[in-house]
Length: 365
Ligand code: PLP
Image (cartoon, rainbow, N blue to C red; front, top):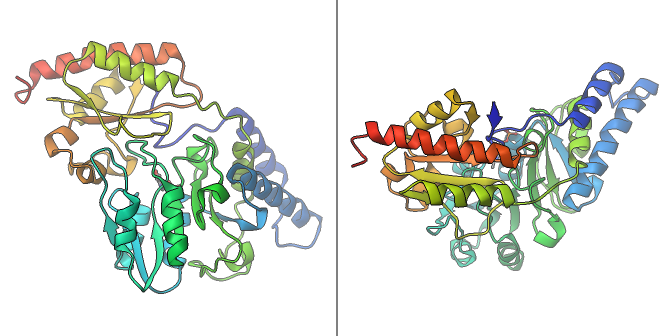
């Protein structure tokens, strides 16, 4: 089985699993306890916090551990002060639905999936308190011009949050250089386990806890810490990061060369190096995902959460992609363990499966 769905989740890296197993087995104390057991657990949590802070380019006190990307996004969007919120049409539901609860306005994207910073500027109102624009899109990999949007938010005195779940670990992230006030990450997208994540909260920024009942995480997130998960996330944050787009680019070239009527979404924009989203005109994406699965390849129809849903992707829709093209689109997301042999084999499998499905397709004449 060759795995090409790293934007849905990544396997735990061996060196991360070692830390997870050690802490799970040996460090069972509660980090809030005063005794030695508690101190040992506290040491693990704080070492992980320092490691995550290094990954993001911030101070350890600015890292709040959460149960994952969804909670980090919810904490940022729902925990920001009272007032108007601006977000975008292509956000992950963790931001989109939290924004909806706050009556947020959503800005459009262009055909490449890019947000125009001027659109964000125009959406600001005198009572706007928060702008939330994701760093890398989970379906297309398209990157947003965060620095420019941050400058607009700063000028307007508005907090700026970015969902960095698909960017952290894939490209170099420096929250200070980006100019964000709040930045979400998730463990299981960077070779740590599921159920752990973090929110960067710039020093001086006040957010109100969504989860109450204790003074953990400097009163920003109550609840006994997931010590093994947090320690594993610290180990994952320190993994060496090859950041090459070579395999993805090779795959795109090979597919365009060998298969007719293919369109690659967001190819004209800056993207994270691991993601490609391709439409094979006349083919049902679900049928292609199943055909590839039977051939030993794991790919996706888009966001893991909307897989299986018949509704076309809200991201592609926002990019102006017609429903018929959207429903013919699959996402291929590479990871650390993929090799050139993997992508060569995938290109061959795609060529075969697409040809076979097109023969059966009334939509492809
Ligand atoms: N944000 C983005 C962009 C994502 O891709 C995901 C996961 O699919 C999340 C947030 C949610 O993260 P988690 O699965 O850790 O809750």
